[in-house]
Image 1 (cartoon, rainbow, N blue to C red):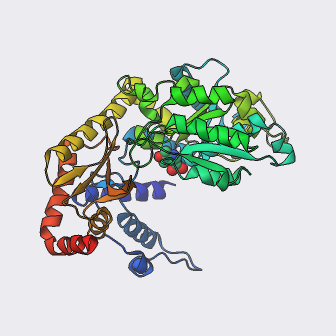
Image 2 (tube, rainbow, N blue to C red):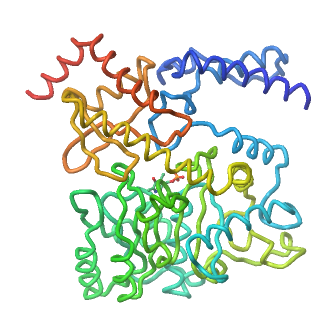
Image 3 (spheres, protein in one colour):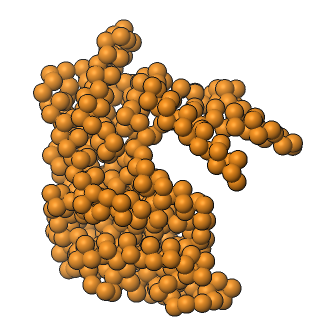
Length: 464
Ligand SMILES: *Cc1c(COP(=O)(O)O)cnc(C)c1O
């Protein structure tokens, strides 16, 4: 073990040093992957030196998500205390299903869940669990919604015509999950959004009424806290009153921005969160823990047991259900995703988590100011979002993003809304400072200036 830990330390030290000079890894085109790296597996063992070299090469050529040049998705940065917690959970290698196998780690998870339920404003009947990502916590919410409406479905199978509702801007896990739940992708109703990307609740009610008239049973409305492209927040209170009227489960998908719960300044964006039946968020997004750390909170824990508990005498041999987390979990073996969050929370306190969330909005303000005040940019986002969407000199966003990537300048993605395609800068990495955000724009400007011909040609081919 000592030897491996030494190799780990050596490679990490080299990586951290290299990241300072090269925030973007060498670009390895997928077509050249197996030529440029030794990923082969062979019959015989290799020497420890070879192993170390191959690993270091692999690590060095892997996209760098923790640097000030990664803005590609809804995560980024490297929080050392959260990394510490995660490394310990790898060393301990517990499985979270029982108290017998995970011991105090069960308490770590339970303390986090309790604290967040309290922050939402829920009573002792509330509870939650962790799953392997936001798609999975959304899936769990849909299963609970279905079973809350049709208690026989877990036993008999699904044989009713069910519908779910979500906005056109919501995450693609919703239709996938509808297919897994026996509801069906085609029974997902996409509700139009307003000009800022928020679900139009009057439309929601209209569609529900049509479905009821056609013999469908609405089982779930999914509201989003932080839509994937614009980072928009659906109006929970308005949607909740419709759900109450028609007795429909309301889930809030806060995978991206549900963590505003930790901020006094921004939690108004999820005003009414206590009204939902379930709420999910990814601590690996705004909170900045390593992937994955996704939490599901449920107002009434009986729904967790109804949908996920199954007896298994080979597994549950000691302790009460309350401490055997497998009874409320989607998975059987489950990695300890709680310890990294707990280690970070313990180290910086709730106020420190608040500062993490607030900083992202501050960095977004820096970016927004810059874009709005520079005539070569057009701006597509709104206030109160950490997704700053823009175009530069009318260059097609997808071309610019791809050239920046292929030339190892920056990793940033594009998105579209209302027939416009644009670059989406996500200010989620709180190890960044104002200068890093300004440097992002400077990198784009310099790159375009140095490659005028490529981009001018692009522009003209698109406008033709
Ligand atoms: C990221 C995201 C998800 C999916 O979460 P994963 O952990 O990537 O599965 C779901 N919904 C929204 C709004 C997201 O931003």
